[in-house]
Image (cartoon, rainbow, N blue to C red; front, side, top):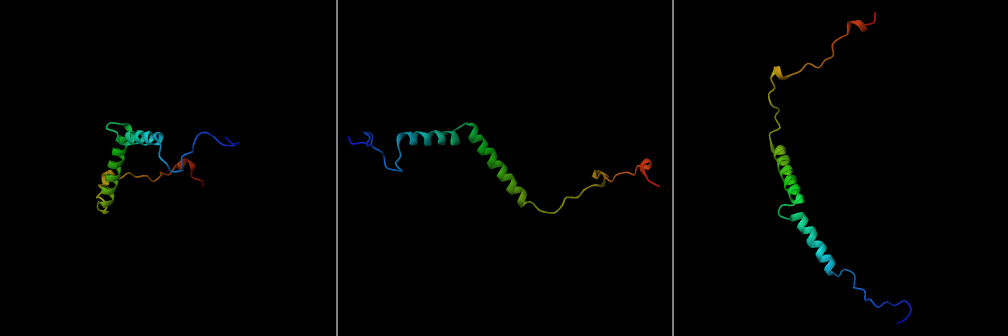
Length: 84
């Protein structure tokens, strides 16, 4: 062997080895597994997007409000702090 050479041959860039295949399989099982936490989170996320789109599709007309439901939020005058 010459100086600087190694006995291990280097694989060309972009080649897929067994370690990469195992890693991809593990990630796929975590994301799309039967009863995993991540798959349930993705399902909940899909339900949220669906309800958001449904909310956007609803009519934009405001709903009727009863006067009984309204609350008076105007501040009352404090007679003790009125300057003369």
